[in-house]
Length: 192
Image (cartoon, rainbow, N blue to C red; front, side, top):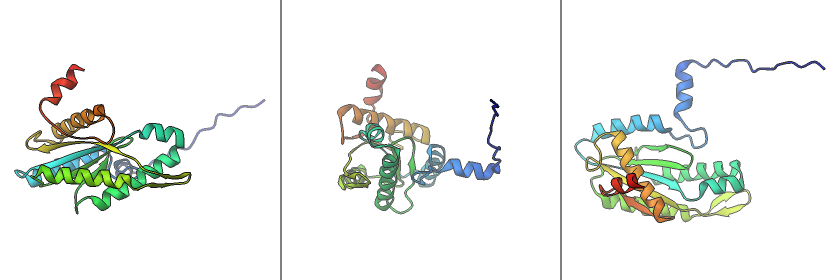
């Protein structure tokens, strides 16, 4: 018996091309974490000293759905939700897919947290609309964490961290929950 070791030829993409490919999610075409953080930093500077609001959105039960329905159905959900989010977002509001089922939306120059609350309600409403899947239609919910600059953080890293803390707090309360960051959340989460 003859065994041969087969290998794929190396693909050498130009560095700029490879970087551009890695900058966008191949399922949703939204920017990934690093380019979104870069855009977030630029927007915070551009709108300073006016406040900006960051929303992190995590689809409830997505991992279980992805495992039970398959990755093709999971990708369809992510793609459809990204399209809905793009239609819902204000013009030029940066969007990103930060992780498996975590999305980010920046509302630059929004000083009113009531506007963020209204946007959260709209996001939750578009999730009520059934997603088209090969096996049938399915509605979802999401938890949302909200933080604002400069009240909760003055740079992209601290703002993402505060919104993440608010998101974790929302997820601990159950499904379909929206939380605004509060200073009291950080010590409680560290204690846990």
